[in-house]
Image (cartoon, rainbow, N blue to C red):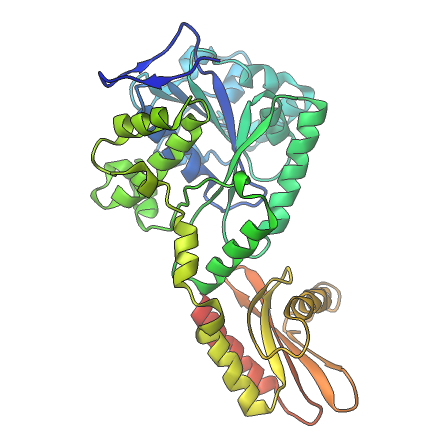
Length: 426
């Protein structure tokens, strides 16, 4: 493929061949901001040397079109039915440099049709074209269904979008396993562009701890240096149908997506000098030094977040003092410990045990129809017992476990403590 190099005159030199990089934007979980990443990354890539970008809205929900306040009547569905040509279906978002191909879904039957076309292989033929564009970004459905598989079959690479919530590690692993299978069986050239952390809240103890644990379980090279911090401007941009770069208060968010675009382009750069020149071409003086731009904001947030000396630990300390407990730990539904105070057992082991016990509570919900079954008490020996309380934060379950004397009445204290912990961690 051609190497794209920044020139002193403010343009990018190319040979006769295009980059032709097809990148899927994927997530195992819904609601992680995949569409936000795809749309804003596309706009940012447009700012780098006037490259031509296409965004394909292959998500059945039509998130890209909704994000830019469009209701297109032509797209993938109509092309596959022979009702229009590809050229007729393209929608300019930023002149000829950025165009959108919508999914074309108008009625529920169109969803079934698009999925059938994916299963039959017809969709792949449409997704594999677009050689005249430098980058094609595919906003894919959440999960690992037929459409996502077909997109991975034609792409050079993919970006996995995650957030810092319970279940993130499990969702990462599932998608990585699928991509590995696609690479072995269908598309040998497929590679991971990177995992990007979206909607990160630096002030959140729980998100900082999850980010720390996720990065400790996977090789550092899997992750983008850029970290997308949660910002109200994304909601404003969605309402207005505009990218964040169009908003006066969207400067920080714009910097993050430009940084991510530079990381994507840097995979084809020949040297660090070329990368720095590209950054200057794209950003001018509005961001400054590239080293600062690529600073690990997540790591800085972690260093500012006192995981083991925070308010949650203090709440656990007070709980143990009030009830005579030997120790306590808070964990997520995957067994990830978030805070602890004098845990008498290994923290990881106790937290994992809490995850296993949590499955019993889920079973009580589903089998016994006992939605309020949030507590479990188990004898450890003649003197002590293990008490666990489940509590929700947003749409995820968390657990507080304490080891206390047999005679202690602690359920009321645990409920009070979990209410305070939820308020701190939200």
